[in-house]
Picture 1 (tube, one colour):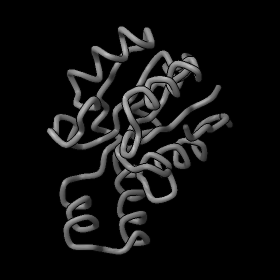
Picture 2: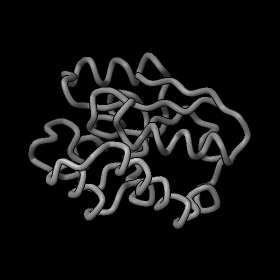
Picture 3: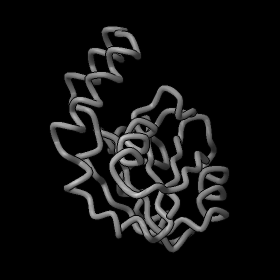
Picture 4: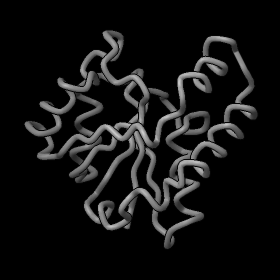
Length: 145
């Protein structure tokens, strides 16, 4: 099993959907807290659902269980908190939510990508989700697109 991750920022629609299509993605899990922002361009929920279906033959699922709370996000983004503190709070939130029990691991049998806005996974919660699940589930491959 492989789990992919991607951020849409600094990508054109052509780059974004080409990456997904070439990886054979069949399901996109949107792990953003806010998925309808006007700043998101082609990655707004309803547009993304349409484009995924038409271009990649993939389904769109918004999974807020894998998103930080507004409070955790605001403390990091708006109040310029440290990544280390954000990481610790988000990891504690995932453990509290017991995401490994609430997600169906077999749903990841189809090529699945976790979507967030950050360009790189190093300082993005999608990487933290993948690392958390990797520690709880059977081993799987990770590919950051």
